[in-house]
Image (cartoon, rainbow over all chains, first blue to last red; front, side, top):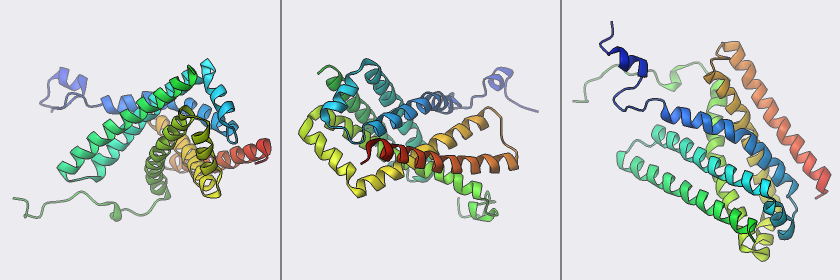
Length: 125
Length: 130
């Protein structure tokens, strides 16, 4: 016998009110990231010996620039979600966990913004 | 409080070793390694935005044998995390939980990640001749 209300059972949420949010966002994110990473791997391999002119001409193409922006947004978000779980699992001191999570959030956001800025700077140059 | 001995959930060491365990922790290790690769991608894009002189330095570092060895590692980590990620998505859809299926898909992930790494590196060397 359950003491939970039918509505609470149907929603499947506990006291935190967001049981599956992190999990679901990470799934949505990975589904997008899989093809983007294959595209990135193929692109970087074809640019393996490229000089600056060749590589920037490649990134100036609108499809490449847009895909790179999509990849940057998805990748660094995925990185934050993944590192968050690793920290939750292995860092047990409350203070250290708190600081590490904030550093990961700010750090990945800065990486995403910096990478997007670089893409736009090259694309509009 | 806290000093009384309470029943504990069994620790990892209790279980008989299964190599699917090794695949599972490898997913996490490659994930952390790929996070470092994410910093590399940021650096490479920044170098491209900064200009030709700095970009050629970065490309030269990556083309050094140590750089190539690290890129080889990242290539494998990427393919492993990607293939095993698809395996995880299948589990999320409710498929592949049987012990034998999990073992077989694990082997498939391992073999395909190595093959994809070899094929892509051979393709780069064949096309670029570098």
